[in-house]
Amino acid sequence: MKKTGPKQTKVKAVVSMPNHTVESSDRKSRGRRRAGVSFPAPSSPLELPGSYADLLGEIKRLIQTERLRTVMAASSAMIVLYRNIGSCILERQEREGWGAKVIDHLSTDLREAYPDMHGLSPRNLLFMRSFAAAYPDPAIVKQLVSLLPWGHIIRLLQRIKDPDTRLWYARTSIENGWSRNILEFQIDSCAYERQGKAITNFSAALPPAESDMAAQIFKDPYLFDFLGTADPRREREVEQALIDHIQRFLLELGAGFAFVGRQVHLEFSSQDFYLDLLFYHLKLRCFVVVELKAVPFDPGFVGTMNMYLSAVDDLLRHADDKPSIGLILCRSKNKLIAEYALRGFKKPIGVAGWETEMVNKLPDDLKSSLPTVEEIEAELMRKDDSTRKTRTNGARNRVEP
Image (tube, rainbow, N blue to C red; front, side, top):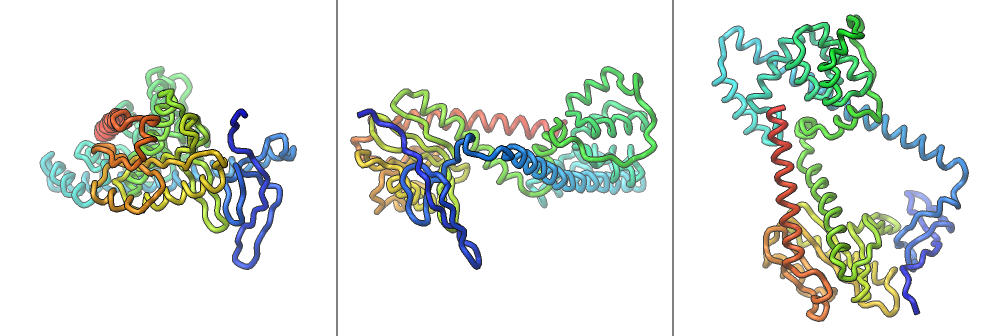
């Protein structure tokens, strides 16, 4: 008999509320169902009401608008801060004749106090001073210039000396949502000379939600450093990049991996979980759960993986399938911690560190059908090196825009 993937079945979901429960009998799930737990699956588009597309579009617009408004508020606060820092430096230099040595020492002390803020380099402090000198009126900065990303402001300081011309490019960039590259192109093509008019109203609305500028603001490394959220964000970026890479790597091996899903939703009545990657191995006849972490190994990862495997075995596994296999890939690990964390667990779970050898707990009869330790380690190391180079180049570009 030809084997097929897990059958989608309708479930009766019970959602816990503070004072009552809501039951729904028209939801679908992967595989079997149990009270209080399921792997939810979306309904077919053909089963949705005709007005669903309008509802989805409306909610997306609300989310985009509020996300942009929130990140713009944070970005504007950072730009005003940069201007105020530059004003302090400018005032002291004019009054006391500070030189480059003081700026270097100031940068060192500030970065020691705020190690996550890469925007406190000597070069960037000098840009802040130039920013304060170019915009002596704080009202103009607050109402207009603060809506620009810091990279745009630096380019304007470097390329445009006339204040009125600079203000025109600032406002026009915001109104059209120009990316930094488009801004430079417009400057090169003398857009102001061709169509510019003096700016008399310094207030400006937010850039278009789907513009290139809005996309750049969401990814602005200065902003995330300023907010102190850079490291968690980078961890998520690394995890997502590794998920993409490992998904392609395992499928390209041709060793029997069949892709089932990524970020597979596991829903309990009181909590939600998401499996990074879920495969079905055609030779082993079992599911393979892969979890990727951009942090060192934590014993708690094993408990979470054990729960995922139990849920997959209970809800998705067919009667003639073998027990599911789990693979945890993390930044690094202590061998003894990993061994103790795995001791006593009967489910086949492997832990691989990016920079050390794997503690492989898979049964011997399963190893030959899975990628070798060397294959996985080589791919992880290659991907990690590439990610590091990208981040290093990105950091260098931030210091020297």
